[in-house]
Length: 299
Image (cartoon, rainbow, N blue to C red; front, side, top):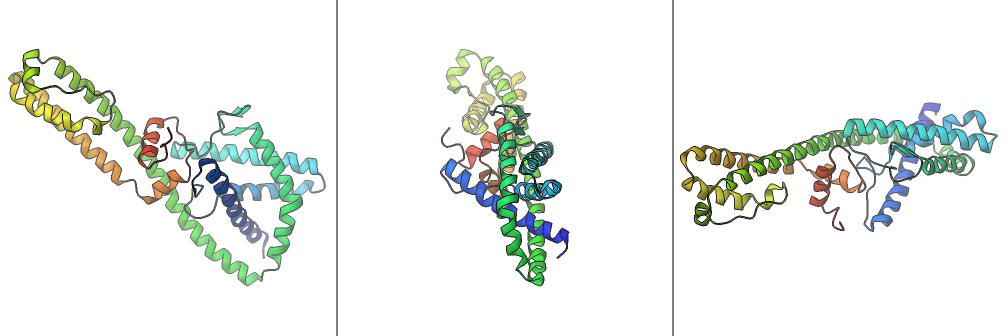
């Protein structure tokens, strides 16, 4: 096999090992089975990429444990930082966040994580990889090439599908954020309108509890009934305001339903596979989605 084929094989193998490690760790941490990672399949590319980077970066210093530790630490830390920055720029979410750790840089990397990468590099080069390499060498080349061909196709399809789901999730988060903003403005307009109604009319219309949040579903039905009564009793100069409010409430309700329908199984898998997913820009929207699929039950 060529050197590139070997590296690709190692990438897939260590991506799988990393998935086992992360899924086990997060499952124990959250007390629920978790299919960890960005992909739907059992692979975590950050581990596969990290392993390949470690193998290549430490090649010139194979005789020095200190050199292996330092170069592995540096190379893997750079990879983790660049990957974190790029993914957040693309998807507006963070798949890992070290902001609560000491000596972190923008939450993408931290000292403890970098030291762990150094230790993992030493273990990989000195203990794990020699045995894995010897084992893979025993597999016939035609079998390896066949396996690589199939795995590469499956991986590529999974990656493309997951990437599309992650980009669509970003759009959903943006839509929810805009929806909440519109709902809050509508809530304020509703309060202004109801405050302008005289006490006599309020007695005829009835009472409605003013909404304490911008969530449409918490008060949409009551508000609709209130506006129906209000329309028949307010002066003519106010009826146009009532009609606009009714139409706007109906539109936001339809928009909310349309957003909910876009949450297919891939996006749910993506959220459940990354229960500690965070977002600076769309924090409220992300928390709403997590609550919707039952990830924030303990909060």
